[in-house]
Length: 103
Image (cartoon, rainbow, N blue to C red; front, side, top):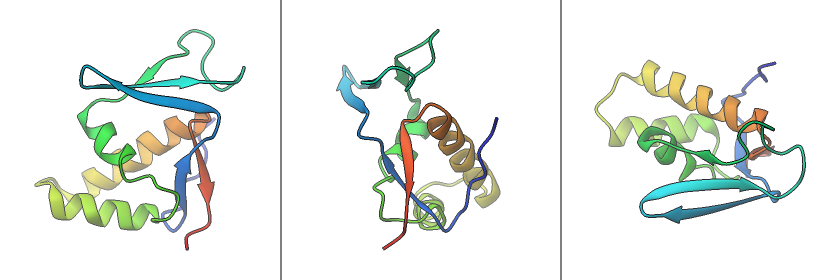
């Protein structure tokens, strides 16, 4: 079930994961049972996912993340927003990120 994403909400990393870069690839490992998929407990991100991940600091709203990506990448704004929403939905589903109030 997809969670509703609020663009005014900030998302940060869950305390129940460990993320490490190994040979240029970001590997995310859940620390508690039920945090990941039973079929695939390791999670990796492509270049687009990584650009989004690097901005999920629990302080910036998703709107601010989209604005930053819009200024950095030559891609349509609606495509960037769709990508941000999609990756955040997947990370939420896997309990890799958690919502936090914007400060």
